[in-house]
Length: 272
Image (cartoon, rainbow, N blue to C red; front, side, top):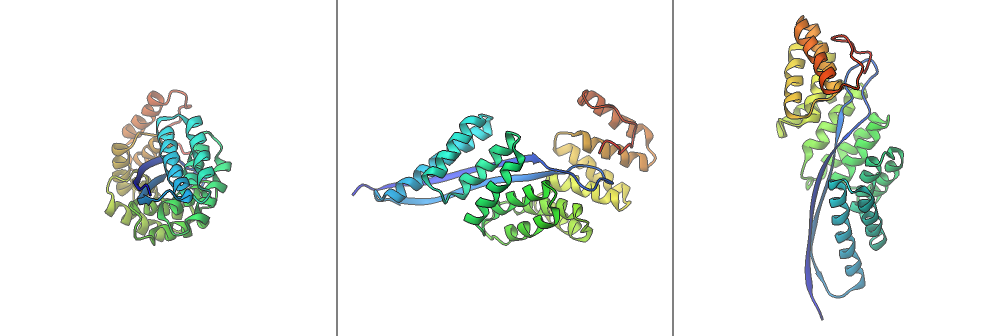
């Protein structure tokens, strides 16, 4: 009887913009979506079920490649093929959800993330992604339970991702103490985590700790591409610290780096 060994190993880390915090506050955090498929080593004995499972793994790999390279139509086709081969593939549903978001179908991605959770209810990556979707779509408080479940997965390779997301979402949900705790832990594990740095800058600003907010905003801008929202927050921070020149400098960066954005005065939060 023919034997063959197949090892599936696939990693994708995706940063996807989320929906923002309180209308009275400042930046729209980016949630960290991630995809880690670490496939076990399979010994296939010509069992049709094994063959289909391996076929699904191959299709998931092709879908991930298409998503990573921006070939979304191809990625979607491969994700559907993976689901057809193995309807129990949480990886395939997760990737299909990510593809839907990249195509602009944010609402359609939600049920796909939820389906992945039903198929892999204790898998950290799957739970983190669905939590990020919930938080980004107005369900910040509900998302926190998903992040807690993700962190309970001892095999989850990037707990800083779930901690950063949880901190950002706790901030949105008005749970400042939890937000500070989650964000501090995220930064202990990953000092350059852009999600945690951005949310910590906002948290410190809300608390009136403007020097600390400046430090986190500067770190955030150093490790991740600038966004209009982050530059506006940095401008607000400098305005509070009395450095009107620095505040104006951040507004000038918005005009230079985002010429399509209507210029706002230093420290103005109306565009948030």
